[in-house]
Each structure stands twice: as structure tokens, then as C-alpha cells.
Amino acid sequence: MNCKLILFFVLLLGSYQVKAKSNARLDSMKHVIYSSTDSAFFSEWTGKIIDVPEFNAQERNQLINWFLDRSIQLNNKILNAQFKFRKSIEKTITGDFQEALDLINEAIPYFKKEENAIWLAACYNSAGGMIAQQGNVEQGVTYLKKAISLAPLYQADSVLKSRALSNHYNGLGNIYANDK
Image 1 (cartoon, helix red, strand yellow):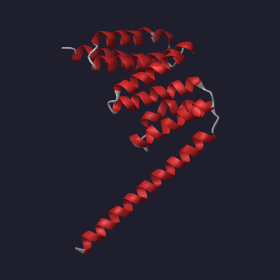
Image 2 (tube, helix red, strand yellow; image 1 turned 180 degrees about the vertical axis):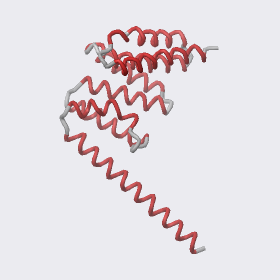
Image 3 (spheres, rainbow, N blue to C red; image 1 turned 135 degrees about the vertical axis):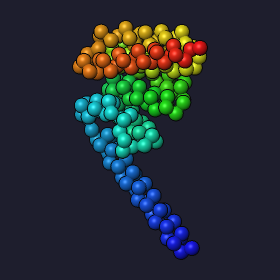
Image 4 (cartoon, rainbow, N blue to C red; image 1 turned 45 degrees about the vertical axis):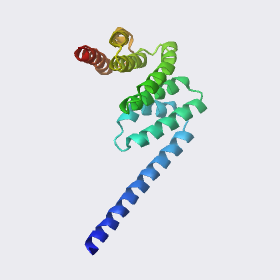
């Protein structure tokens, strides 16, 4: 019985230590986000925030909210639109398609205004998949075709262009494969 009690306390202490490290890491990031004015720093995070393994989904969501808030404070509309798109991905993962679509619809005008074809296509790609999954296959296909049509306008290296275009065609194929 004493071994079980000791094991319980060891596990409990371990979970508190993990949580304390997580909180310290988040607090550190919050400080960096709110003290930074470097556009390159924010741009780097728009590209990697979804894939950062050291943060769990709840922490990523908190980071995205801080980045959104900071982009508003800095009056940087394009970064705000990029983080809205990233937040839409998090909402899609949790199944909150309507909020994800709302975020994408808020971001699209900024990408159009900036003529940022690759981010605009990413929005169309995500929206198309969600719309089709909700049952409106025709509109979903239309969005994916819009994403594909923007490929010649991408201002990115050939690897990124190829990856993005492949992703659009994959999304279109998934829609057709699931439309029975």
C-alpha cells in the first residue's frame, strides 16, 4: 500500500512539474509576442504555429489568440489575416466548421487586397473542404478550383508552389472520392 501511495505522489509531482514547465514556456512566449514589433518574427510564426510540437492544441490556440491580439495592436492587417487563417485550421481540427469558415471569410479580403495568391488559395482550399464536408459538394469544388486557378500567381519557391498545388488537387480528389 505504501508503494502505491508513493507512486501516486511521484506521478502527481511529475504532472505538476510538466504543467509548471508548460506554463513557464507559455508565459515566456507571451512576453516575446507582446514585446516584439519585428514583422519577420510574426511571419515566421504564421508558417509554423500549427506544427510546433512543443505546444499542445490548447497552448497553440492561446498563442494564436495572442498573435491575433498583437497583430491588431500593431495594426498589421495582413498578419492578422494570416493568424485568422491559422486559427481557422485549429477550429477545423476541433470540428467547429462554422467558426473556421467565419475566420476564413474575414481573412479573404485582406489576401485579395494584398494580391497574396498563396494565402488566398489556402483559404479557398480550406473553405472548399469544409463546405463539401458539410454537404455542399458543388460549392466546395468551386472553392477548390479557385485555389487551383491561383497557382500561377504564387510568389513562392517552386517547392512551396508544388506542395500547395498538390494540396489543392488532393482536396479536390477527397471531395470527389467522398461524394457518393
